Length: 109
Image (tube, rainbow, N blue to C red):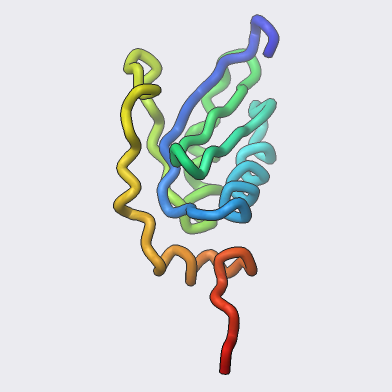
């Protein structure tokens, strides 16, 4: 990260597999001003590296919500690193909606 880059963090809800995280990373990287994106399934967080402190939030929200996920920007002044994330939203319904082979149950019929 260069001195002109800025890290921005978001809570991402609605994902529970590596395929979900990859879709979100790809969508975030396609937004102008985003240099890099890292998504953690375990913490339900995305960390973006943006160029020159740009604010890509509106376009990010449109792209990622269009994929079926929700974003909430984490306050840079709060220290959320020691907080245990609430994963109560992760349900089997998300696996069915995901549609990727890593989340699908095998057909035994």
